[in-house]
Length: 148
Figure 1 (tube, one colour):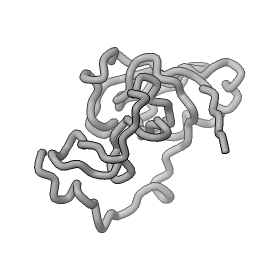
Figure 2 (cartoon, one colour; figure 1 turned 45 degrees about the vertical axis):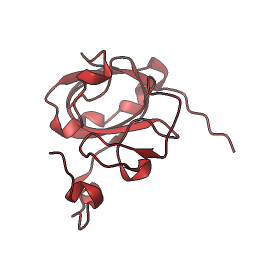
Figure 3 (cartoon, rainbow, N blue to C red; figure 1 turned 180 degrees about the vertical axis):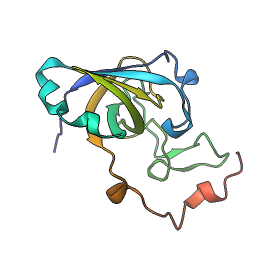
Figure 4 (cartoon, rainbow, N blue to C red; figure 1 turned 180 degrees about the horizontal axis):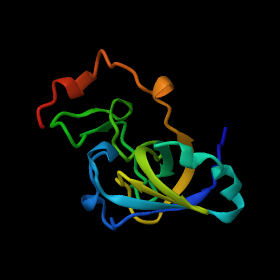
């Protein structure tokens, strides 16, 4: 089965090299802009009523050779790629929760940029604490990581 996605926009950030990006959006105070393509602008109606949004995007510059065992940024031991947030994945999809600062027409200004400039945007979803906050009882290797 083949599955195809087309970008609905592009994410603009000050980051042009992978080494410049923060490790997670929750650790970033960097602002960015989401440019939603005009044909999808009607889908933004009401988005300004949310303080946070999920951005789903493609890791467009990730290496094409995928390994199922990876060395995550916060540990010195290899783990299965699905037990990490490592960007080189069988389906190179990124997910960030960012703070929505403002909307101007088809532009969304946000804080929490952790992606490269020019990143293709696949989807936007509202962050709703009632649905999205869970108390994690187990955090796998991260709980006992060697690197902090």
